Image 1 (cartoon, helix red, strand yellow):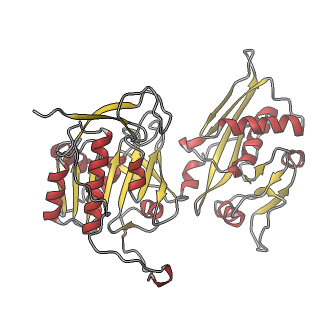
Image 2 (tube, helix red, strand yellow):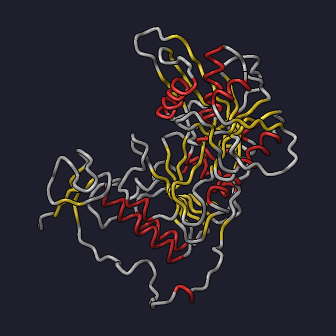
Image 3 (tube, helix red, strand yellow):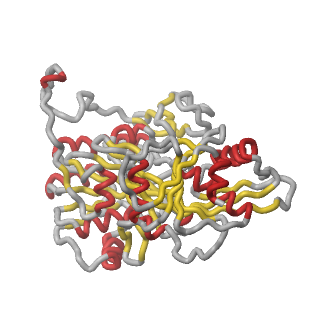
Length: 449
């Protein structure tokens, strides 16, 4: 019997090595090399298309709109850039239990298309039980197939010729041409190649579900994310109701858009107006609360910022954030102390964005400063005031992008006043909301309180 040839593959980047080493030479990660069986196989090095390609000048190339399948989820359509492009491969990742399979099963049950739902993790009876819980309306053209062999999956797909195929998950399927176990670098790379080749040859869109590592990255080689057309990240806290769908990569649209869902007993429900849900209605006159106008892609929405400033009980003051960058909070506290003279060095500061939402929009700075000062002085901020501004290291309030859209959202939600940077070029338009322009933190503090 011939001896099996083995090699060592990095589980992080997919690099191959002839011998085991403690550190991967390609990505410098430690203890990621795993031994796998290797079998030589003729590869299609020419790419996915079988047509003969000729050199062509870019000026002579005729452009055309990509045909798309519009799904029943407006939030998903927004993130994808208008729908699912025919022949595209979409990879969706997220923590266990976050709702990836639920979202895709809802699509399969409600879309009036021929859909092949492949599951390597659940039996048909388990999927049917979940389908009965999610909706009463079920697609008669939705076909289930519980199989883990990529050859059998693609064989059935060729016979069925579905309009959309869903594979849950890419880490559970394997190819018979590779000796290593499912989920290994070799298997994921080979199965992904076969699936992508099938999608391009037959013009069938395919959605892949991917597991993630403890660091939050999609498990398997990084090359998997380069091979697919769209990489979606389904995130959120399982202790909260809201889930965010973001595009980390999108060859057919923007990566700035987000979709917001709410987890209910019947599955995932789209949130059409997040501002109305994320802001608490019974705030009373409590200090430390401020409303920020943030922008995710082309969607403006309001977030509630909560801050608590108290005297440090222990020797070292605590700085804690939920949903906000901790380093940026430290920077804002340093600016308050150095430029505006507020003594916060000996105080604990806790910051929270309600609803389990995470965002990196610098326009939240002004609302964060307002919430901290409100809690520090124990003076409540009127619930009819919102904020949109970035703070610089010199204590100046810097302008933010798409200010007209932010002002319009605050006006639509019924707020009376918005604080913005005086350097923002505000269009000459008759807004019903009062616009307060401020340039320095000292000026902002004086006019707010």
